[in-house]
Amino acid sequence: MRKPQIDYTAVFHALPGMVALLTPDLVYADANDDFLRLAGRTREQLLGRYIFDVFPENPNDRAAAGMRETRTSMLRAVATGERDTMALLRYDIQDPERSGRWVEHFWSPVNAPVLGPDGNVVLIVHRVEEVTELIRARGGLGHDVRARVLEAELFTRARELQEVNERLRRAQARDREVALALQEAMLPAPIPVGHHRAAVRYWPATGTLNVCGDWYDLVDLPGDRIAVAVGDVVGHGLSAACVMGQLRSALSAAARVAAGPARALEALGLYARRVDGAESTTVVKTFIDWGTHTITYSSAGHPPPALLRSGGIVAFLDRATDPPLGARPEHVPRPEASATFTEGDTLVLYTDGLIERRAEDIDTGLARLADSLARHAQDDPEALADALLADLLPPSGNTDDTALVVIRL
Image (cartoon, rainbow, N blue to C red; front, side):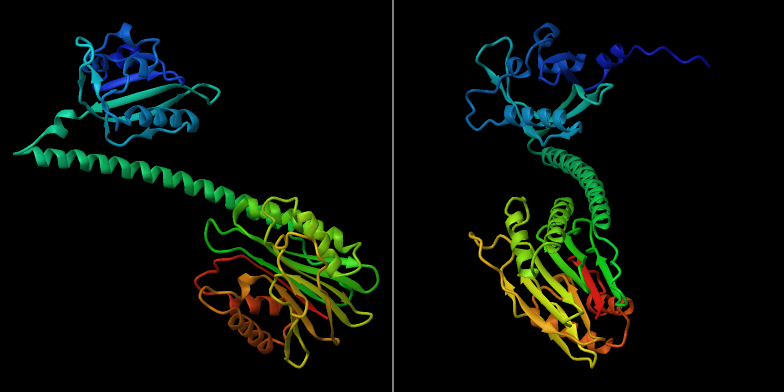
């Protein structure tokens, strides 16, 4: 069967209901017959003219907002490339035959973009339904008619909200995927530390929005030494992951030339002053020296590392804690402390997602960590890392990221 030749211009003009086409500058390009008839304007009075020159706002109504709301909706459709459905709108129209006489009208408008081959908006489809008589209805069935109109408006708003929420969910899912891929690329596997064993874990938060800026880092130093750090950037999503990457790289470089962890954190703090989003970042840095069997550490507002002695006793390294990055207006030296260890001890560094819970004191979380470490004291680093995550993260899912480093000393 031969396909009919469709005259789309004729179809447009015959469309039931008021439909007009406007340029992105809000100039009339065309209007169908119902639009001309119900608006009381000729085609010559519309085409090539700015919409609000043809239909100015009633100057006698100081509370009128129809022009502003209509312009905002149309420009939003141009900017986003998405359909924009407006709420029920009052917009009075001047009588074309009696200058200065304004007639009350109520409208239900929808503005939809038409995209060109390059993806840019070339036209706006302005469809509007006049509901003036329904709104004015009083008595008898008037209340029911008004209720049906308002019900239709609520239904339209709900459908629009559903579409917006779905677009938002898709955008958030893409943001999470990118942030996770970025974090995975920037968080390295543990480096070899001689005959010592190490395990690392990164556990993202449950939920679309909760990709955060937690990180870990292990740096091989001259002699039988390594530097280990964990940190936590304030914020969520891709921006936090990007800040995390900058800070982790800067601290990794500083550790290779600094005399100790405090000096490395001082250098990081100076660098962080020039990184948007780095303020209030917490980080703890440790230098482990097997030649002297010492752990030298410094903390910028971060939860203390846990040292699990071979006998099952847990000590928290909390004697060199200072405020987070950027918390002080002026640069001051950071504190540094040392602790000794014996072969077979285990050092555990972690971010607050492992221990902190809402409406719970941090000491409760630290006690829970110490108990889990004592119960799994004989596990190797890989098994211990898994046990800590299983014991300490809530079954319903963690609301904050968790970075974890376990090193058998």
